[in-house]
Amino acid sequence: MGQPDQGDEAAKPPLGVGMVGYAFMGSAHSQGWRTAGRVFDLPRRPVLAAVCGRDERAVRAMADRHGWAAAETDWRSLIARDDVDVVDICTPGDSHAEIAVAALAAGKHVLCEKPLANTVEEAEAMAAAAAEAAGRGQMSMVGFNYRRLPATALARSMVAEGRLGTLRHVRVTYLQDWLTDPEFPLTWRLRRDKAGSGALGDLGAHIVDLAQYLAGETLGGVSALTETFVRRRPLPAGASAGLSASGPARDSRTDDVTVDDAALFTARLASGALASFEASRFASGRKNSLRIELNGERGSLAFDLERLNELAYHDHTEPAARAGFRRILVTEPDHPYLDAWWPPGHGLGYEHTFTHQARDFVQAVADGRPPTPSFADGLQVQRVLAAVEESARKNSTYTPVAV
Ligand code: SOE
Image (cartoon, rainbow, N blue to C red; front, side):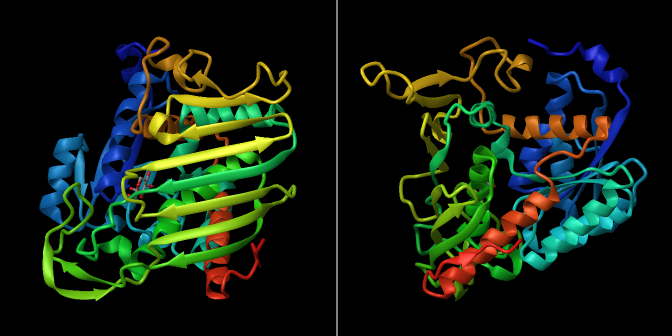
């Protein structure tokens, strides 16, 4: 295992991180920034310089709990800090563009949670600002963290080296069930003005990016259905209502849900392969179930987030009598990211994707090499999401993805 000596890490030049937003993603990113330098031998030491949120009491509590050196209540103050080199955006999508463009203009590197933005127009502005900033040596990346599981990174390398041959199918679902209860309150993820879309942008963005990343090609066009099963919900009681295990408190008043609860779409990949996608928050019994399968002339791969240390592989070139899906336990030191962790068989979890994300970003900043997925990649996903919504509005008419 390549775990660095603690003394080594302290000697590394610091890379100050300033994070905007401190809920679920803020906590997950904090974990990533805190652990990356302790596990990987990084060229610079991530320092949790400041965390920002509007509720001063809550953000100070978050800073104390997660080890942030300072707390800010205005993101403009955070991006102006001299001890902040990287701005990490973990807010709802309605503020991604404003914060990212300002942070890039202020000379910072930027990591932005997915989806990149709430609209194609915002994503275009972010991608343009990132391209300009890259000329000044500033790095930017989108937080599609499921690319950073050892099993999905291994799958990508197997597809890239031709193990599957010509791709014929990509089949991917991302299913949750936290909205199945019609009384679950109207949190920000259910409002278009805050989230941009519902299951489509929250879960669909992940599976569009993962499918394109694994296949090594983009979607050319889509035919889609979306649905909002529960159209009105109780308002959350109190200002701090956000996602939690038991769900926010409830209020007697109700308001309209303005986003999709589920999206289903088929797509044609650039090579002609066919793809199917399903994103839902009503798949009762599925908590965070992301499954993807790729079928090619020479073989197939299948991944299940609920068994995230495993990758199923079928080699179709083997004699039928010996062929079939076999399980690769992705815990060997020469598997992606694994040389820094535990001996074979000691698996990783969801949170490790954020440590890998932090590691890859720090390495990219130190190397001066733009990381992926870039803001341009995030813009392309945004264009797929827009095509899905347009197709759904046109009764599933096949809709090309803008380029
Ligand atoms: C939705 O509940 C959510 O938190 C997504 O927003 C995250 O991106 C995903 O990783 C887990 O589920």
